[in-house]
Image 1: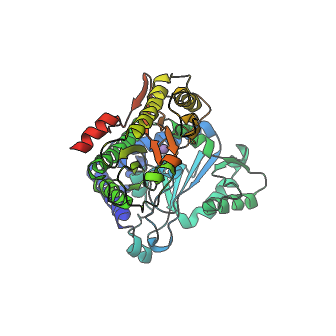
Image 2 (image 1 turned 120 degrees about the vertical axis):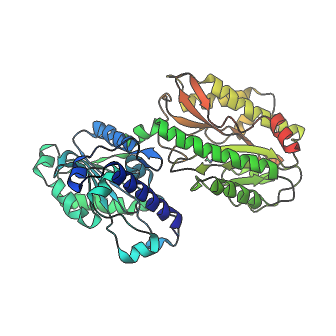
Image 3 (image 1 turned 180 degrees about the vertical axis):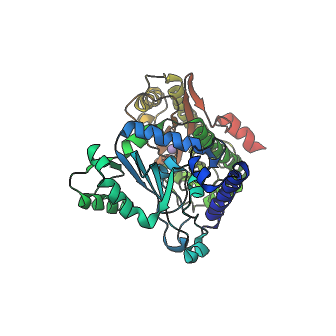
Length: 458
Ligand code: GLY
Ligand code: MN
């Protein structure tokens, strides 16, 4: 059930309302005129001003087009899954209410540029999944948007907007998420696009996703703080794994330890299914079954990430089940670590792309004297990319073809996988691109073989 989520919304709203009433004991019409969001009111621990700034930046890119972003719908009565708002909607609004819709109208409509359509309170549904806020000016203020309206009015209002004289004069550009034809997960967006196409053949439909990807690639300081928190929670899970891992226990016991640490420390969920693979399972990249008993002499790949307030982390360590690496495990481990270190050292701001760093890591492996059992280069056993952007989504949106910009957060995660030796090693850390180079945000999670053995010996 969604109690945690609903409780959070209720508490947030209560706090926000309390703040509004304590700080502005004014009549509603005055409150309505005081539309500027304040820096002190938070949604998902980020200031209202932060969300407002993102909406304004987006409108600078889309200029005079109308932007429509659909929130995630909740499945009936919240039985099957814990609700998670979709990333683009959350990025622009901070609003976790299921089924909400955000509309940005640069010319303004009925005096408002920002419209948030919300499901109206409903006695029956509110009892199952928690209260929905009223459709009032106070709610608009609490969310830092200019206008809230009832979701049941969305069709009528959007049709009016799209057929208005101002929209026609401005070139009839509409930006929204346009689902690829075979992508059935975006049913709501698909229906909306269909409906717009039926409303008028002259409306110029444009994808909003590339603009949002550009914005989301560069993280603001509140976003970096959220990612750091997610990393710190993941760090607590890794240090618990380090204390717990041994031969004779099951992979799922470590998964239990990890999820326990995530939830105990305030994460809302894991950013992706925990990968806890021992022995031959270390060589399956996205092994998620986690059912095997850990045997003596196994390596254990633990690839995990907590999600905190819609921001993810992704950190992998490889542990020796017995607390000591065998000579062969240790030399492969060291090579993977060297590949990571050389890639980080090779980074040049304004020049390095993800692909360049990948090339450096591969060179380190191919230049090594270590070989596989048939005498081939170990670089042949590095089958995935060196890294990816991290943000609201674990493989976050961003531009892989250009130099990495200041504010991007990436993983660097080389790996070597040798199924015939039951040896798989992956080491993954999260880095922030800064003016002075890459900063390792997961610095406090030990990764040298000596540190790992020392800590496991305790
Ligand atoms: N942590 C899993 C991945 O990056 O694919
Ligand atoms: Mn990763």
